[in-house]
Image (cartoon, rainbow, N blue to C red):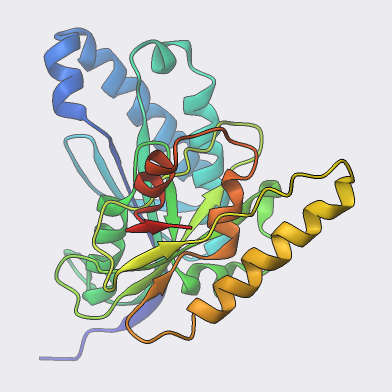
Amino acid sequence: MSKLPKQRLTFFFSDIEGSTSLIASLGERYADILEQYRCIVRSALAAYQGREIDTAGDGFFAVFRDTRQAVIAAVRMQRAFATQAWARNVDFRVRMGIHTGDAIVAPTGFIGLEVHRASRICNAANGGQVLLTPTVLESAGEPLPEGADTIYLGEFLLKGFGQPERLFQLIVPGIDNPFLSPQTERPLPTIAVLPFAVRSMDPNDGFLGDGMAEEIIIALGKVPGLQVVARSASFAFRQQSLDPREIGKRLNADVIL
């Protein structure tokens, strides 16, 4: 038997968060929403050189030869969902996972550990969230297209994988980006350090609080057996008046400082 070829590709997975609950609450209306969701995904795949490989229920698996096109497609999809009145009215949210890696090209599709990794990344995402791996960012290059940006979320254990995966959230400009920790396990106890509030009339003193928090993050990062939430993630809550317990939940942190 001849050896099957390998290709380096970008794998895209998506599905609807809480689809079972939506079916239960919407009944026959869900069929129309599912069809509109599929139309938006397929339109973006066709426009940005994505190849649909498999569809099961509300899940999509597609591949891209060009990683930047995959990022553009994800941005356009999330923007499209955010502007649909029907999506807002029923709390409709799509989660996505994108990963770049090697896979065997077989007559039946694409085979390999990296395909499974991409699928697990999608499963870890929250509704409305697009998760990326470092290989996506390396392949896409900087700056990201469509004015998109990323936030580093930390290292997480994906189901079936022994080593933690570094995950980034794609920030889509112009829409509400839910900032939630991935739905998976962290390999180590986790602490998040929030920026300190300096009670002073001088706005320049705010830098003092940031500097103190950054020094603590650096110091804690050197402690064995402890996972520290990235500065970009914890500082995103600077202007939000949330209960620390809620922030800890969103960051999947065991301790908030």
